[in-house]
Length: 119
Image (cartoon, rainbow, N blue to C red; front, side, top):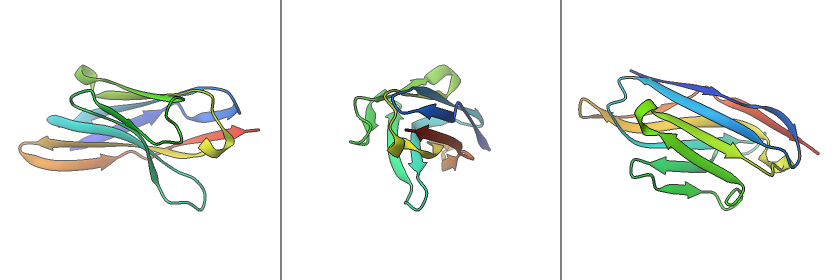
């Protein structure tokens, strides 16, 4: 069983910064990728940023240049540094992990952390 613990959400004014953390624990086995998604009120969940086991990263166009995703492989922890935040970045941010444990694929989601950006 794999568990995710997210932290770092909160409220900030436009232009401010926040740093989200997500720590995976349990039988993580071989981790393939860790990603952050977000869901704004009334909108579908969307990919914000991801990092794979080769340290390759991917970003949504709306956050590229402002957000940075990084991962500590040894600790299976992923961070999302969010700078120059905008009101439209408001939403619930979810961490997700993909991997193999005992040759069985898994995909686990965190409970989400609220990010609120005010003007």
